[in-house]
Length: 555
Image (cartoon, rainbow, N blue to C red):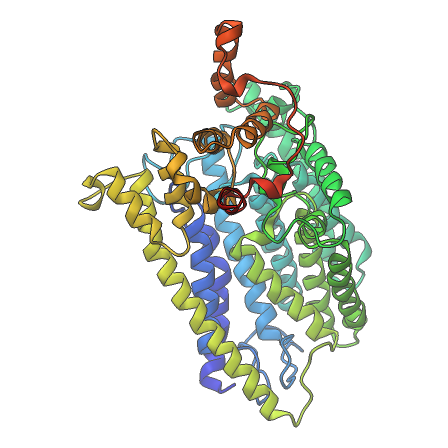
């Protein structure tokens, strides 16, 4: 990497990590799409302009800290990459914590009021969510920012008067998110401080104080609610008598049943939602889940158990081989390895409860953290004298960056067609709905949203049977299930239509209940077709694929 490229690498990576989580959002139908596209664009620019592989020694930014810049030819674990990653998370976390405080104390501030387009409006009072619009994602972002603070405090020997308020602000943001996972992450960070004796005393004390400090903040938030402020969300949750797992136990149980039925090859990549929706589960959770909320189960149910074991085994073996970086005598190398591992552990915890890696603004920085950990442990480092390998890696990185930039720009442009369907505005929004739907259906990336609008607004969806293909494999909901059942019925597929209706009953959704209410009002001999509760057992989810239905009709 030339010195010119190296000078751009650090700020470009900082911006690629820090800016996407601060984007306010993209509206209906995908509120956080622009955050993901911003991440793709930012990392694409970084890879195009200054790929982390080089044919010469790595160059660390000036003033990072004593003993930091250790040249490592072709190594992704160079100090400048870790410094930028940590600074990016720290910047994003501090700003997001401030946004979270605003959302908690003044829920109406931002969004459509005082600062339109600057701070997202929270979905529920008494809970911070940042601009990532999800409290658990905000928690992970702030926990990663705490890791970034640890790295920089170690490298620059921050004084306690700077480190304490930084950590306190991030801990307060985690508390105000109302995330139960946040307490697990704070416990992990406190344990790190207690066990890692290579950390500076002030840093160790700050980490160990994070959990009790958060507890104090929680008490203050609860008292503030009692004194007339916003009710603390955890208190409201305790009084709601809701499932402590937020339906996770139920969806995991259903997922294990699917794995047992399809253990070898799974239900197909990206097919979990479709397979789960159209498999009988009388005890299913009432929400429409498009992920299992557990990465291991997600891989197992979609790819099968053998492939999952191969993937996880390979990852585990690589990380085990790189463990030497944790205890390296070189402090800079060891620090990068330990902080990167903690970042991976935090994202790993979140991945066992939700699906953060489906979002580019978590996926791409996590990939960098993994590369840093492996590189610090000597895994994947290109040895000296292999300049050609470095050059090839650099070319491939630049090509990937160019593709990411082009893809992000094209996706942002295409998305605007779909927005006009759900939130019309301007001259394009004045066109008839049918025209806006047709324009959206031409989108390569978001045509499924237009197809959804087409089939759910049609008075007779039967002729649109083929149009159900894309939306059914994106996310099935009650409105789509009702439309699909009607389409099957109109197409002469009465048994399949009834099968879909019976799956809808299991969700106990208000739209479904309204549809089935006609069954109670009608006389015994005049009940609508979808009221039959005699179980239809001859189909599996594969038989509900629109293309399978059309193929069966042609035979």
